[in-house]
Length: 132
Image (cartoon, rainbow, N blue to C red; front, side):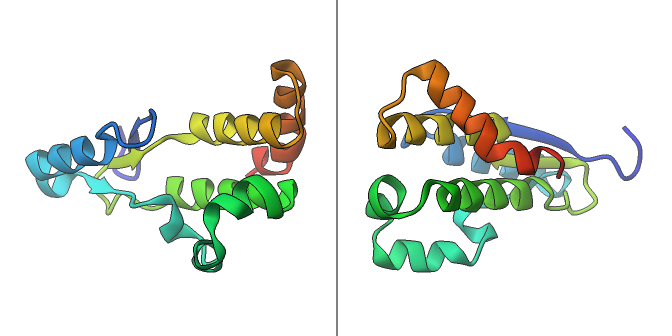
């Protein structure tokens, strides 16, 4: 690992399973050699309005699917690019693979798609961000 290299350790899984707690414990034990990337909603100002108006309704009913994908992708990519404070280790609650899984699950439910169709739709929605 070079001086400017940053390694990311991401824990993915269901809500309320202790990912953030475990990352916090790990960060405390490692000390300044690690930095937590923070919650997803800290990386895009649009989350404040979304939360104020009801995140569940926006996510599954009112938010255009392209907007949902955009907010998620922008947040994930911004968080993933957060510097490791020069330390080389970034700790993240849910990694980039969860972005595709979250969008695919949302698309499947909202648009009543089979898994293969949801995967194709998700790839289309996230294709602009693959170049980032």
